[in-house]
Structures are given as structure tokens and as C-alpha cells.
Length: 86
Image 1 (cartoon, rainbow, N blue to C red):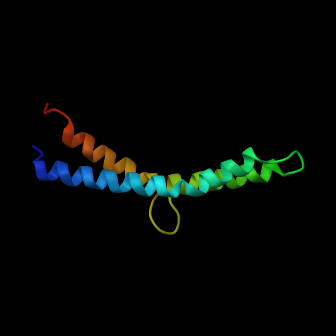
Image 2 (tube, rainbow, N blue to C red; image 1 turned 60 degrees about the vertical axis):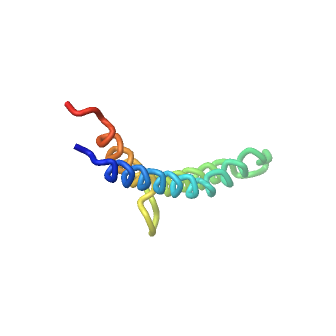
């Protein structure tokens, strides 16, 4: 059975991981904005590739951290603790 301390710790971890994911989206928004304001003479194909790379890094992580994967694990742990006992 989950203790209130376990639940609080899991919630803090979940919130921390969510914050990290939201921060990693900064580059995604920059790439999206560049595409939104692109002109017909801009290479949209390459711009979309840069967006794809930014999304992949936010999802999978880069050299530091593991992107949204840590959030997914933290969410699963929190949900397990919050689930009613069988």
C-alpha cells in the first residue's frame, strides 16, 4: 500500500519531469515558428527535418536526460500509486 510520502515523492518526480519536458519544447516552438513565417523561397523540407530532430530530442532526450521517457516512467509510477487496491 502506498504511503502519503510515496505518493508525494512520486508526484514531485512527475512534476519535475513534466517541467523538463516543457522546457525541452522551446526549440520545437522555435522551429514551428520558423516554418509558420517561411516564404515560398525557403527550404521547408529542411525546416521540417529540423523540427523533426527537435521533437525527437524532446521525446527521447539528448546527451543529457532522457526526454519524455522519464516523464512516462514517472507518470506510470504515480498512476500505480494512485490506483485503488485490487
